[in-house]
Amino acid sequence: MQIGRMVYDQIDIVNKLIESINISGNSVTNSRRRIIAEIVRKEGLFTSEELAKSLPNIGRATVYRTLRLLYEQGSVCRINIVDDHSYYTLSSSDHHHHTVCKKCNKIDEINLIGLEKSIKQFEKNINSEILSHNLEIYIICSDCA
Image 1 (tube, rainbow, N blue to C red):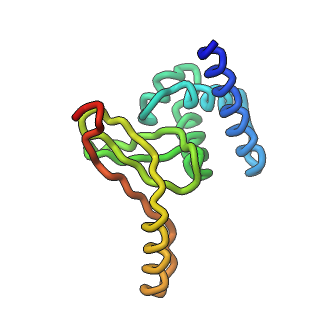
Image 2: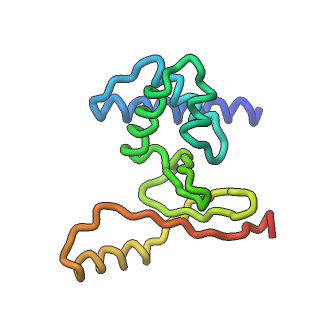
């Protein structure tokens, strides 16, 4: 019964991502639907190259453009781990930060409300507009400790 629920959850996420692309005025082609479904199926981190390899019948440029669109909409997170590669994962909330386990690469989203308030204050102090920021906190998770 749990597997059936998981599939329905994945379908719901795919539909929400498709809806957000439609609302933004972008087209949702069959290729984009397949890319979104593949992203939702993936567990944990993936690179753009891994995503493209898992969809051999879809052009690499289409995969990269769709991934960039989803990133710009906040539907996926881009995480830069120390090996100089960008990794992606589905985003499950509004602006947030991440913990990254240095042993198993497990990523968890964290909300740091106090930090966000400090950044807003910093923005006032520098008299400039902060366009964006990212924060990854590297840890050894409890499973690896």
